[in-house]
Image (cartoon, rainbow, N blue to C red):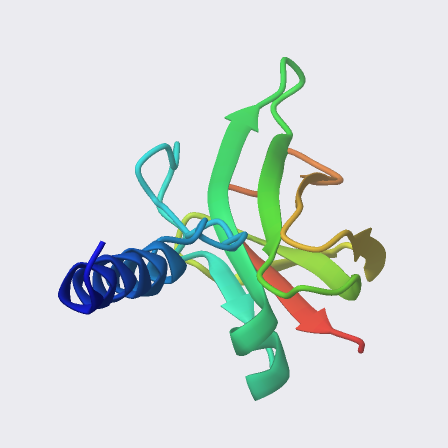
Length: 140
C-alpha cells in the first residue's frame, strides 16, 4: 500500500466515524397535549394563577345527569410538568342562566405524577344545577 492509499483509507474512516457520531437515538420527549379525544369542550375549566396555567391542563370534561336529576361532572386533569404536582380543584354549580345555585364543592387536593392525567369527579347537591365551572390552582 502506498502513502496515497493509506491517506484515502484514513480519510474515509474518519468521515465514516464523523457521520456515525451524528446518528443518535432521540431522547425521551414529554407527551404533547391533545384535544383530539376530548369528550366535551373545556371552556368550563378555569385555571387560577399563572403557575397553574403553565402546569395544569384539562383534557376533557364529562357532565352527566344522574337518575335523581343531580349533575355530575368528571374532569380529566393533566400535569404538564416533569415533576409531581399538587392541585386544588372545586366545582361551582350554576342554574340554567349561569347564576350560582349556592352549591359549591369543597376544595379537593389531588397529587399528579409527572405528565399524568387524573379523573376528578364532582356531584351537585340537588337537581337545580344545569351548568358548572371547575376551578383549579397549583399548590407547588
